[in-house]
Amino acid sequence: MGFYDMTENIENVDVVAEVEQVPVELTAGQMLHNARTTGRRKREISTIAKQLCIREEFLEALEKGDYAAIPEPVYILGFARNYAMELGLNPDDVIAKIKKEMGLTFDCVDSDEDVSACAMPSIKEENWTKVYFVKAYQFVYQHWIWFAGALVGILLIVLGVVLLSSSKATDEVVATTPVVERVVSSEPDYKLTVRERFGTDNREKANVILQASQESWVKVEDGRGNTVFSRVLVPGDVYYVPVGNKYKATFGNAGGIDIWVNGKLVADAGADHTRKSGIMLNPESLLGNKKK
Image (cartoon, rainbow, N blue to C red; front, side, top):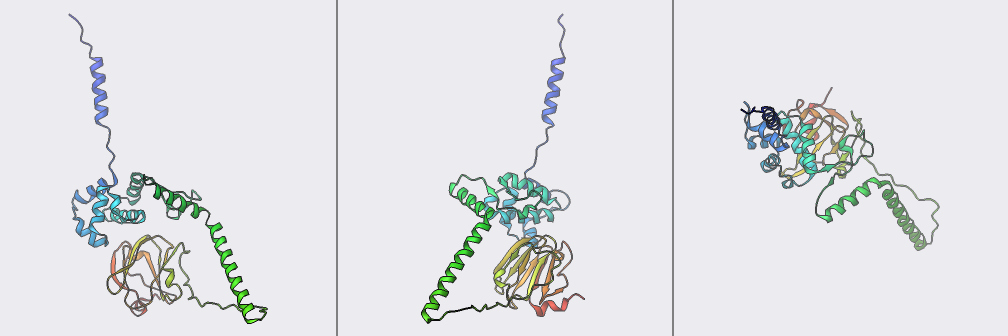
C-alpha cells in the first residue's frame, strides 16, 4: 500500500488562502459611493448637490471616476474635497487617490511648500498639443522673473519713445516728468498674510473684501443669479467683491471666511464647517454684524 503525501496539498491550501485574503483597494469614486449609499445615513446625490451647490452630474462623475466630465483639475479636487468632508471621509485620502488615478504630479520649488502653492500639474495625455502647452506653461512659471523683467523693459522703452516724440513735437525740453500717483484703496489689516489675490479688477474700488482663514468653497452671484466667482479658497486667499448692492455669496465653511467692510472686520456669516447661502455682500447689509 502506498503512502499518501499530504504535505503538498496542505501547502497548496495555504497558498489559495493567502491569495483569497489579498485586500482590494477601493478607488476614490468607490469610497465616495460607498460612504453615500451604505450605513445608517444613506443619502441621495440630489440632496447633497443642493447642500454643496455642486451640480449633480459632477458628483456622479466623481463617483464613477469620470474626471473628464469636470472642466478643470482645480474644480475636480475642490469638489472632491467638499464631497468627502460632507460624507465624513478623510478628504486628504480621497484627493491623494484622485491625483494618482489622474496621473497628476506637482513640481514645487521647495518640497516643504504646500501643494496649493505648487506649479500647474503635469497631465499625462496623448494629445501632444496639450502636453506642449503644459510644458510651456511650466517653463514660464519657473522663469517668470525673466519674463516680467523683459516686459518691464519693453514698457520702459515704449514710454521713452513716447516721451521723446512728445518732446520733439512741442519743441520743449522736459527736465522732469511729473509722476501722477494712482489712488488705491487701502488694504485692511488682514489676520493672515495674503497668499493669493482674486478679483483684482475690483481691488481699487472694493469696499467688501473676503479672506479665507480656513479652507472654504466660495461662490458669488450677481443680481440675476449668474456666477461671477466660484473657487475653493485656502487660508490667506483674498477676493475683492465687485462694488454694488446686488451681489450675494454662498460659503461652504461660513466660519472660515473673514469679511472686511471699508477696512473693518465684521462678524462671521456662520459657524465653522457650516454652509451658509444668500449672504448679501454690501456694506449696508454687513455693517450690522460689525465686530466689537
